[in-house]
Length: 142
Length: 257
Image 1 (cartoon, chains in turn red, blue):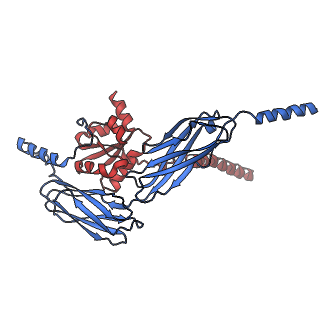
Image 2: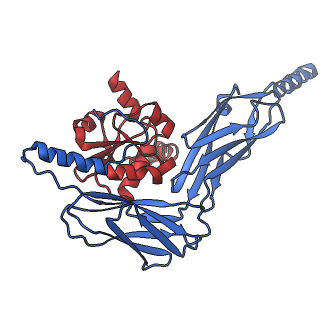
Image 3: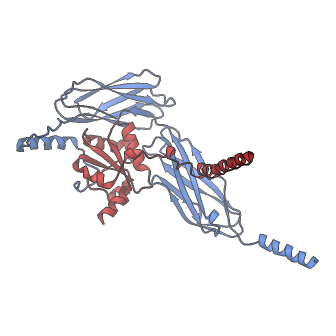
């Protein structure tokens, strides 16, 4: 009786491992400790807009997309022309200002990369990534 | 009995000969190591139609605007080989870059109709500069601040030329504490007025094909005092300082909302 209970317990433990192993294999990049996003770096549109003139909007999309439309007053800063564009942002930055970086949509990565470089390379502190990017901005204006 | 066996064999043979198309990829992931100063990294993804009917490409879509992908042909005949060329424009990117190209064909088998090709490039910069901004608060003691520039060991950089866009800053370059490292000492002449400078760094290296790097130096404007009434004269002063500091964006943008 006792042996049977132990055997059943071991079987249940082994069964519990099956979905866990599956998740580790198929969703390797989505498990929380590997997530590329830190929630503290993200900002939603309402919050970013509430900063008003204390926010500097940075458009991380390619030049042609920026030219087709952008957040009013946004500064273009993409990695295609990083060295050329960076000085414009640094000239406008000041300590009390927050930087809001956006790219096309939730799935794009350019805004995260630009935000990371502004923090790591330029040493800027208050740099945020806009959740949903340009798509969210457009939706809010419809 | 023998007849049934014969029918079975014929049926199996017919099934085996069923029309099918399939692109077989030589590799779906390519690792690239562009040379110093390269502007582009190019990956070739080779394929062959191992089926017996033609395959058509429906779309070839790169994951970012920095990558373009081209097919040699719209249609791939049975047995035909070809390749998709993916060109990654490096621009100002550094570090490990992973870009994908999604290829869709008219293969009726959903398992084969979409293929994701991955291009991984490790970009080693000629120069790693940190920080790219140094600043002084208004009225702060004008002591020098240090920017560290680590040169790529393969670049054989002997010296750096640093030029300030305005005469309000001086920049002096010394050897750093580690090999291939430089220390750029930046100092403002005066910290009582707001000023902005772009410091252009030009490495002297055979591997450098005219690349320059930009860092910024600033003396910040005086912090606005809370509760201070803005008189017409102070308003005008603030406006003048901002006009001097702000470099206009490359394209016309509407006022910030």
